[in-house]
Image (cartoon, rainbow, N blue to C red):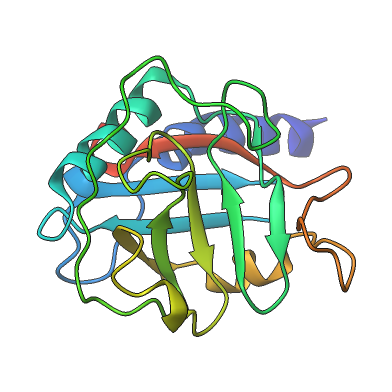
Amino acid sequence: MIRTLAVLLALVCAAPAFAQTPKLPAGVNPAHTLVIDTTKGRIIIALRTDLAPHHAARLEQLARDGFYNNVPFHRVMDGFMAQTGDGQNHDGTGHSKYPNIKAEFTSTPFTRGVVGMARANDPNSANSQFFICFGDASFLNGKYTVIGNVVSGMNVVDKLKKAPPGSQSGSVANPDKMLKVQVASDMK
């Protein structure tokens, strides 16, 4: 009985520590960092406000709005990327209540861990969806907005449920989800 109470007390006392700002790599600004708790673990993304300030501001706003909570990784293609961010329809066809964002293309290469904004054919149609590259995706260079880099948790990204081999759409049945997305500096 005393052991049980001690364990419960320890958990209650530790709970505030779980909610605190996570330890971030040196040089990462918590005001521009997304902490994504998924069904497979935690992913931390440093947003590139130097490259895409409008896109970074949008992702931060949507995280604060709770738009990304319980949103699936609806498109996951092994060796290419994992896409998420459709908090409206959860299948890649939706967007946020905010207007689309004008492209902020750069020459920054799409490599493993780079985060890009998804869009339709119109270069200025990015809104809420984003993707994380599993490996080199240089064919996207200069054609999509680089919004950030995974600074912790690529092992978690690697564990996400992927579409069946040969799938053209990359759609995932019973996909993993972003359970909670927060801006690191908001975590107290």
